[in-house]
Image: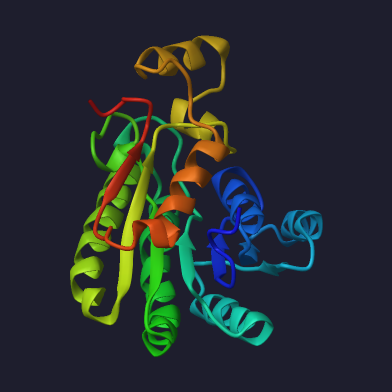
Length: 249
């Protein structure tokens, strides 16, 4: 159980949901982890439960100075950055596309799109110096098979998928692999926003659209991220991996 031994992973949105699942799973496999999240208090709890291999950091991924500080913290504490996971996300509530305010739209752009750019600026030079690395973004099935009610969120995840593929081609000569995950809706804090409201009826409706019959879990996504981050996936780049129970079939 040491597929990431000696590696350092930086994960955003790591204090809950998919990101928390990732940092816990990565640490189990031997990685040092930066638990970066806007909720610094919760990040502290997660890092303390993991132990000495984890460092908590309050970070707003829409602010370049915060992202730069996140990378610097990883280098100061662990001396390297092998894995960068752009997991932090933001959405509007399911509903009429014309009812989404400009402030909400701008926040979606900043967190789901521009943060990937900031992270690349911060970590690509480090990975190039080290001889390679792995960048993973949490995209969404929404970027592959958009559904009504989440138009601007869907579009941001489609952007993330295209950025992943383009980065993969450009960074391949530097031995930096770039992939993304496309989870179906799961047990995270954003579920109510995706559904419009969190009710048993809405959950049943969502589950009925997934052939394997359930929502995703943080462990599902963490295991997929672990594989992409590990040397087992050394020939995998530019992939948008569906972790969706068959939702996109």
